[in-house]
Image 1 (cartoon, rainbow, N blue to C red):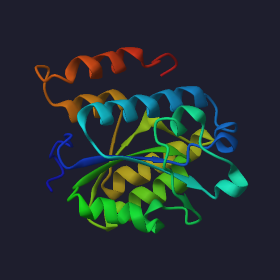
Image 2: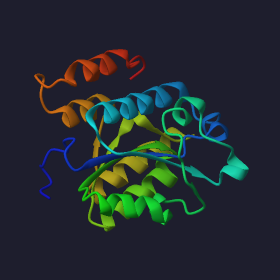
Image 3: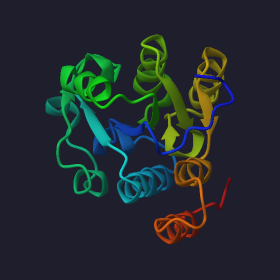
Image 4: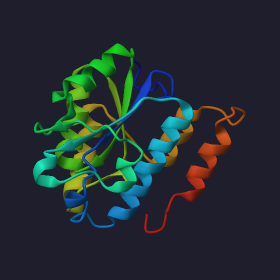
Length: 189
């Protein structure tokens, strides 16, 4: 895949990483990250993209936040920091002939970064919306995104992802995607 190739909804998927209550409680402005992940999930579903989520050691860290849990009821547990250690996830990625994965969630410098790097190493194009990932500390978030971009991931925003997935304003899904974009809290950015 060319580095300039757009990451449209064709042959793409969304992976939401470890949006668990105990972890989110320590993330500044976590409500905005949750809202952006929810918008991505709803947009992916409206466009027919596969959507997955994971939970890091839920026995110790608890379940996903309800906003994510109700949209993605099946969230396999993992103990590896990257999500590629979840066999059914890899089976789904390869079984659907996907070429790119948008990765959102927490924490940017640990599970999100390791997942994105692993996916890149496996040959997938990876997109990371900066406003749909977070870390407890801004420095960790910033340097994670820098590292991912240098490694070949596309760092973008939730709005960019949604419109790139959609591709056209004359498709039936455009109105729903446009409404999701309008609902995003962009204050403080």
